Image (cartoon, rainbow over all chains, first blue to last red; front, top):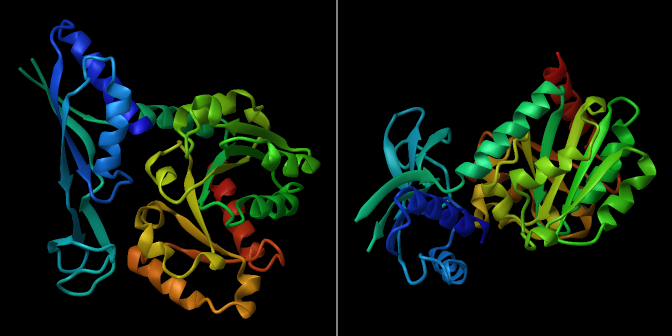
Length: 111
Length: 221
């Protein structure tokens, strides 16, 4: 809920900077799979918090970002589907997460 | 019209967390964020830890709960600085956020604290997502929670700097496979150090105390 609240605050701030014109019709966000975000729940919270604001009825486009890891041994970058942090190529366990922790607002559309 | 923003949604929390970290550095405080599910023994671990360490180090505690001051009341006997945060006035949140901690810091005499133990809310999901500005994040898992928890809640075990496996005294009475817990943790985060302990018997607390004392020394040296 507080993450959605932060999102709405960021957009309202930017909307004011743009001259407080129009309504927000669409919001594009990127959510990594290794975050504590569930898109359906996010949408549910958004519907509640956006009510009676210029964001009401805006379409939330949530792009899920897969978890990718870079192996410290063989340097290969691979996507992993389950939370077992082992390099699919060589079995090494020391991996760096290169994507999957995103929680970004990319853009929104005004009409 | 499309408006490009490209901003981390948690940017505000993270900038307050950075301020908190600066406050800890300025005051020579080693701050530890304790995260676990409800009933894993966070407060019992705190009770034993404070009792063990308070004559050596100046300890402060921040207690996070949705409501009640029960946890802070349990620690009152030690006559240390304690602040209770109830998230209910903030909307009943299920985790602490950096701004809540910052308010709590206002209530403490920071110049007389070396070790700040922050007890997050009982939850294995959301606390992992919100940095508070702490120096280290400690996850706690009790053996009664089952072997599968690291695989079910990978994020918290991935972001933690140390894992305490609590209630180890119950191992002989239960069918739980502690080695399996350790192996599952290693699948998520092979670099995560693990200390097995029991807040009831005190087993493993020497190692935990040593870890805390080392953190304080590194901060103050």
